[in-house]
Image 1 (cartoon, rainbow, N blue to C red):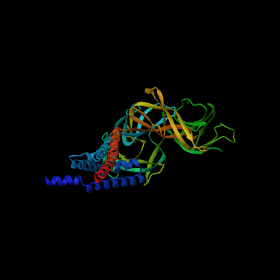
Image 2: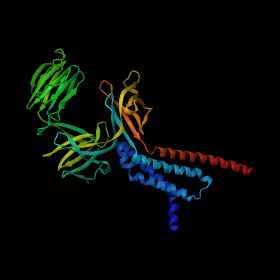
Image 3: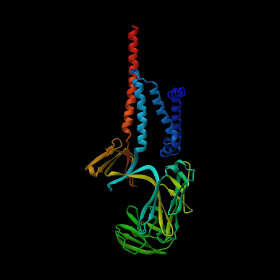
Image 4: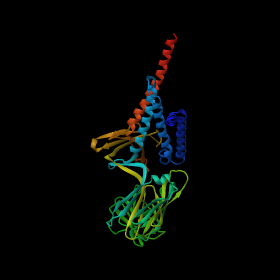
Length: 462
């Protein structure tokens, strides 16, 4: 019995409370350090949502409840003390509910585009799709990647896919994407063309790749287009455009001005030709650098230590004994003798029970500059039959979700193309509000009761 009393006294002691608070402070300091060198998502998964944080928080709740029990039976003077301690426990419980049941993601809505109902979450997963034999793919499996991120050096994440082994060899939180175009021996792969376009106003050099022969590829350069096809069928395009037609080992160049054919020529590597859109001295010059009748993009990643604007997370994987790279939100196609597989390492998504669309977007800019001073969206929800205004300081609350104006994307002409909304669902918010209210109320009562005690003491002295 004495041992139990001593243990209970230890749980309610000030020394333990100080140790717990110091432990929480240390974990928060470590999390801040990790976040500064990585990012918020990685710090959450490895520090803030780890047992390093949960254990001292649970001990804090136990300590608070033990202190309250130790004061039993409670008296009137304990009111502020009890309210504050209960408030802290309720606040922590509300935060736990939010952690496991809440949603914190984003939506990218095309301005004047189709309604969207998917929310992109920071959590990630690996998805596997298999070919159906009819030109399509069906989802085979998906796996959460939290384990991989928390244990990047371990090699124990393995799965069986149609009797063949899939293994994540290593996780890299920061990696630079590298892309090479190489000849392919697969009959389904389309052609690739490396070209340049030059005149006094433009100097462009790039590749155009057709992943599958059945799909035409169109690059829009504003006043003109470049189209790559692998068939002899007519192409339905208007305005000025260059048509590159892959015919096995031959590449046919055709130029169109206002939809009318102006020139046709068979090209070889190194050939130059003017499409005839402008006068001879001002016309652009198309140069064929390299032509591959069948090609495939080979993507690799270079791991680095710190974040830059170009880094993303990437996985080194192995399937059927062959090594591959898998970058965040990118597809990897793997072909076997009788099937094709798609591996996708991507952010998780959830579907809302109502779609949203943006039919108007406004940007206020600082005078004399293109810098955005403010921006807002007019959002339409079909079920509500009305438009809602969302600005940086004016969120929209609908269906239990809160939508904030987070950012936007624009094209080369500084015209907004997509509105980025932050989406939040916080089921623990009422508990956190109530807990905070009790803490504030307890604090106010504490000062009031101290003042009240002083008055009583003065009256007794008089």
